[in-house]
Length: 332
Image 1 (cartoon, rainbow, N blue to C red):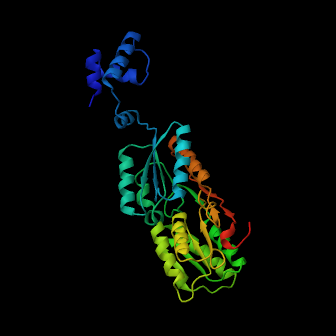
Image 2: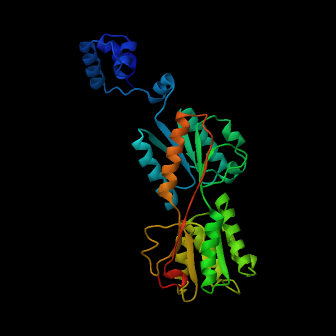
Image 3: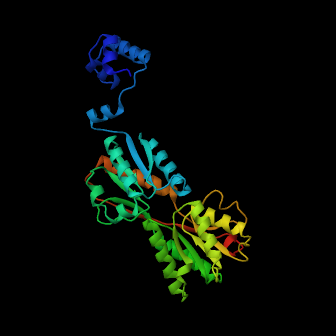
């Protein structure tokens, strides 16, 4: 690997002069500057980003840790973060924590060692419940999608309780009483969405059997297997609700393979708008989360935190939207 010393020797100058040329600093003669740049091009020299950042105490790279990049929700957020960061002159390193606190800690330390300017984090349940140790990393940070306890940090959320309440109430108002619900295990969002479900049932005076509420890994195959169990109950549900789009894809496949007519035999609704949700027949009723706004707001808050570490923390709660389609028995 070509080093800055190699460039200096070939150009017949000091390493300090090479550094000044690369940093576009003044007081280097034009002929020297041209000679150094020619050698840099000839040797294909690339400055060490980490070393350069450490010397200048600055970095134009941010880290983004999401739960699962296969989840369209996090794909859309990641795109919004990358777009907003690029506009501000930043690059993004993307990591998955897979709801695994050990993997999350590994990536947090890796990003710290890479001297990133800051981190946007979709925290695991364990981290969200006790943020104190993460705060000790002393890195500018914004947490998205998860409510944080025991920590002063910028936080971007939607109201999961109210959002789940809205979509469950919609199912109830269209005559459904046995609502099977599948939540992703290991996240605070699953807990909050379950709370919204129970609140809606209570306010509509519906006694829900506990065997209709399921927790599982938030993956398509687990959504499929859990839905099969629900529709094989002695008293199966007349509607199914899933708390993310991966579970929705698995549940929809299970209903189709079981030849359950939607919505005539069983209604269906889910969190998360996706490109396929409006293309399947019948099209799916969903809660649309403001993914673009989440990613952009998180990036803007993080850059403000990087520029002013002592500013007061903010919690931003964004609004979701119920999109009514045919899968719940409506004619919209």
